[in-house]
Length: 349
Image: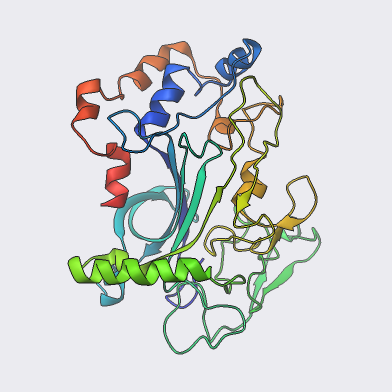
């Protein structure tokens, strides 16, 4: 939920590029049973790795996770600084599909390459998402912070309350606190919560942002991308090689840069775990690897899925449906005709 612009939903989606899609389809890894068969044959899941100066097909696996804020009035001038997109969403009140316009407010990009087999991790946000904790929020409109916030008290069924007993809950104005009740399944809908940035944008990223924004403004003055900022990038200065056989999660991530003690968080997607997180190894500084090193294949094998949570979502698929997936693939000549896979172009252009 957003703050100042009014009550509005935030939607999340995950996309993979064509090389990763081809890898999944070729091995049938959209089916949990095929994942298990691959493990039984002694072959690990390793995402395709791109190379510098890529030829067609050598881009490597790229995954995007995006946060999109629903826009009620897209013609309003305030949205001129946002990447807008038409969308079809499931209304949380009626559970029916409806069309909407959404604005990009957060974006994770991860890319597997030969020099970074443990993946390069980058995260971006719109510049108007949230103020830094403890700073003057000013008078401008923030997407996830409202200087005039007032607590809201809601009547909820006892089974919806976080404590399982309350029939009234209050959503306060303290930033980065989850609502004290469950959402969905007959429980009340979401209401806005306050968000602030707990870890300031990395100083090096700030310098990069300044340079890139200046260049975009000089060459593409009407581009919305000059209003997005890099929060941070995580990579390895001595990356661990990809496994040669199936191994249990968590995967190693050697020599992280910046240090593994540095928190890296996107306020739109890691709102409640901006500083620390515990994914089974005790509390640690919250960053991409603390979470993704625990990614596994579908089921309860605990076998690592090369840092990607996409594979853990697989279910059984009747063999009769497999041809429909293969029919969506690009031919080699189609791949050679584009600089980037089409699923990515629609986002980055």
